[in-house]
Length: 156
Ligand SMILES: [Zn+2]
Ligand SMILES: [Zn+2]
Ligand SMILES: [Zn+2]
Image 1 (cartoon, rainbow, N blue to C red):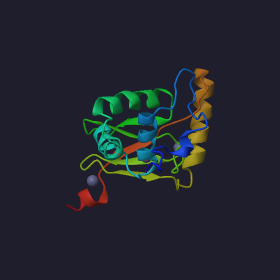
Image 2 (cartoon, protein in one colour; image 1 turned 90 degrees about the horizontal axis):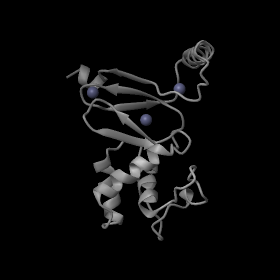
Image 3 (cartoon, rainbow, N blue to C red; image 1 turned 60 degrees about the horizontal axis):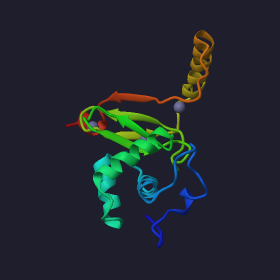
Image 4 (tube, protein in one colour; image 1 turned 180 degrees about the vertical axis):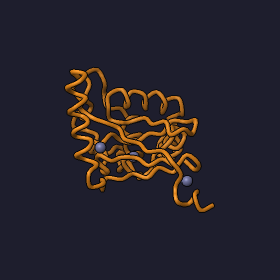
């Protein structure tokens, strides 16, 4: 969580990529919360965590700043089918790094994995190369999510 000054030093040093955006307290607080969890959080989850340290930051402020952080690529927004968006730091800023998702459609548990299957990486690489060629499209990233039922829900 925030250090004594209430700021996470890792967000300083002009880490905001797009011109015109400054690193502000609410943005730092949101990034700190996301950096300190392994979970995918909703705006309400983030608000509750931020609120403990900054009682004057409201839910609307959290929503507004989340949108900014998503737009500049520091945070990724997901819809897991739960009816509310979930957020996590983008690969570049996350300690998790690049990973794929297994999403349970019953309990909405999300398993992050980066220990990819043996052929997974080469399959994706050749798919990306083929698509790039076919559509004259320069692929720079991908989001992989598999939906299904987790072990716990299967055994219920
Ligand atoms: Zn991948
Ligand atoms: Zn489940
Ligand atoms: Zn994830």
